Image 1 (cartoon, rainbow, N blue to C red):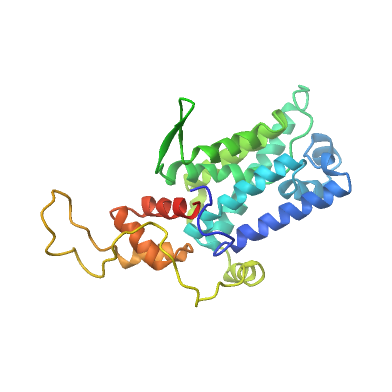
Image 2 (cartoon, rainbow, N blue to C red):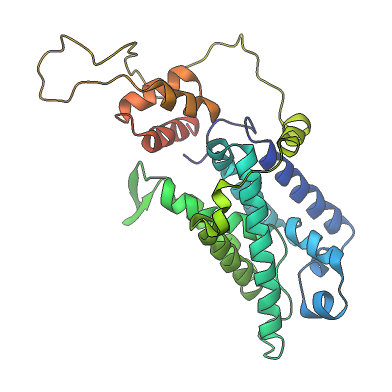
Length: 293
């Protein structure tokens, strides 16, 4: 599951644009030795009204460890763009940033006289931690294991990466992370009907045109991702010997089409749905887990 689906940015042009913007801006500010000055502060935003700081703080990380963990999580969470579609994922991204950013500024105003914190960590914390809400609620656990007596699941490493990013700058990164979680929760609650909103098609076309990776060659043979699961081409399989198990039901074409739209091969999607008894969430994770091997 750790790969987040099909490798690369297939069907995830918005994620690709965000990762490129975050990586490039982080490198540029680091080379110019201005990375440490990126974080939002009460002095810069409220008193001096340096608007450029707001834009820079949304995308650029201040340190190499934050950049590595942040880009890894952004890359992993591209699976949600494949599930939602690029248009709705753009809305989710903009909403997460638009909600978390004012909350961060509000926290600076409320804490300005306490000396508790003078500046916040920069980077797309709002989007990253908003993505943990659907990750927690929508991505099921498909395997569990123990290491030195401690229980882990296939989702544990994503949580650990998020925890590392959350506490990377302690109070400076903790507040942006919490603001992102709040933004993700509000999106989940469909505040203002946000989950039904869409951007103009020209915006989605822009990302698809300039940030979509080149299409893979259609002549390349596809390989099975989920093991030797028998392929079925119609209804419930007939004339099965009585084994006490439920008959295998052919997956609905709509479920196969949804998985294909997320970037998976149609045969692999069909096989995963058979294994998952047509539970599309479980099938998605079977495919994600297979890609990581």
